[in-house]
Length: 237
Image (cartoon, rainbow, N blue to C red):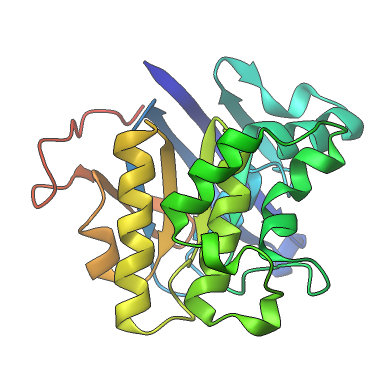
């Protein structure tokens, strides 16, 4: 079942001689429950692409559909709700609120939506993250790996359609990186979560079902990962 569809997407900066195509005619689709790595050198357009999929940035042209919905047919208020409910964004530098505890950071999107957190769901999330004993700690009282777990919990807690992670292990050592990837694999397999990970680390990409390679804003390769199960590589449009 196709969950995400990116159709002839462009992001252009500048005009004339100064024009730069950060994303240059990208098209692909992602079925529900797939874990995808998007890799490429610095400046290849991978983060720009991720931000457009997450409705953080608007494309110059092209379409993005999530579960059949044309994302950018929505107005700004609808897009803000879309980002809170349908997309879980995870960044390299955590983006936690420093005056909020781990539990408060995780439940923040639900609270901003005017809803009450489900206590049972919260306990299961904290347990999966290994953060039950850190639930009342502020970000400054936690290690980098623990802070990234909180940011993953915040993204997962709303049960979004898709998790988008931009270099989620880029600020971590190898031990914490391995633990974070194990969390992604668990949420992918146990929660059937669709996950797209931007990374420059080939070892991270090898743990995903599929690897899309970008260069100069274009897809140059899109293949199922033979080192990670029997993913279907024939998803590109």
